[in-house]
Length: 95
Image (cartoon, rainbow, N blue to C red; front, side, top):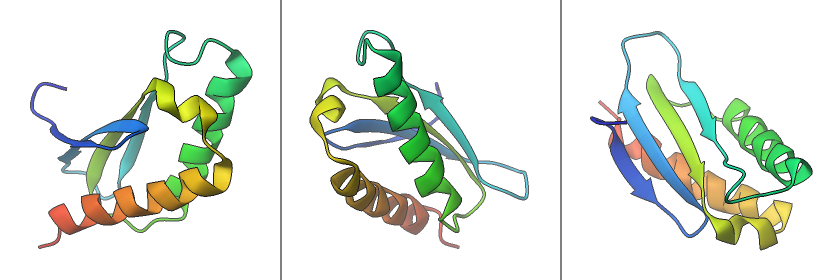
């Protein structure tokens, strides 16, 4: 968290940093304070994992922190916004 780069959208704060491994890694920090119901948190985690799985990212560690605005979003809209975030992150680490 201390040395991570930050990308902010209306639904997420994304912390990312290059790693020395041979794969990208995903971290999720979806708090009860932001989404009080377990089924809400699980839906967002499922969407994030599915979106991450479909990407071909450089070797980075990515941590998603959710904002309150995410609770009202439709799944299709979230997938579109996540695609934009993945593109931004990938462009930052192109060599």
